Image 1 (cartoon, helix red, strand yellow):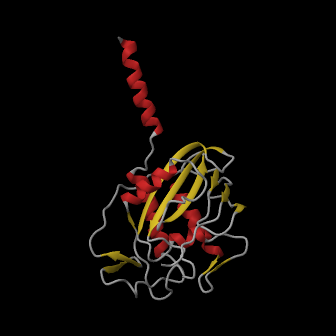
Image 2: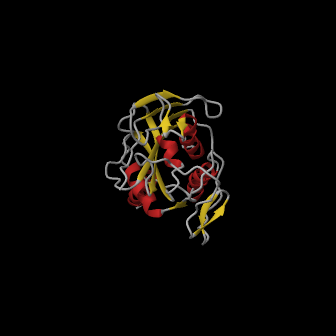
Image 3: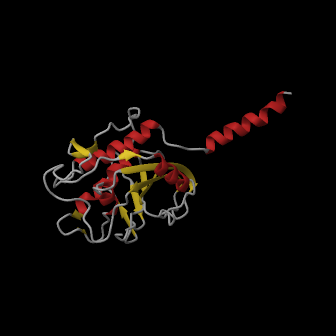
Length: 246
């Protein structure tokens, strides 16, 4: 009898082990990180919207993360997308920090990126009109397109999408001076007049020795990055994606 009871328990544990979803704390780390960097853009932005978490984007991102593919989702439609892969742990704070770190290569005045560098992750993070984000993550024994095994894949989708060809990520000028009528200025961001849902506080993260990430669209490249905290990460990223204005 005892033997007959074991298989269902085993199957249940296996199913739980294979499933993956971000906790409320992890979602808050990602969302707060984006809004922090959006509020700190330099020069300041006249029209930077405050982001909120979207469960539909989260489900879309999670479904794609489950496929463990190191390339942008060709079925993403009118959604922006940033990808990041790392091992041996998933440090979400560092992932958003690394995307934003491309700021040093981007020239807002000329809307150009330094030769040989990538800026598409940064411009999506601070794209003023993007106000919804949803992300998913998956531990992959093998990511199609990356030689390193046993890595976490992070997928974030955005709406409306950033990286529109021929457009700057935001309008330079006094903070919040061009907020939409239905938004008010909060911490240099144009926030909704109705309170946004809150989630649990974030938990501390740990250093990441190895990272990899693809870019939002334009060119394939492989680069080495400086250490995030104490260890030297290795990062790679395929080209980012751009969207033609409608």
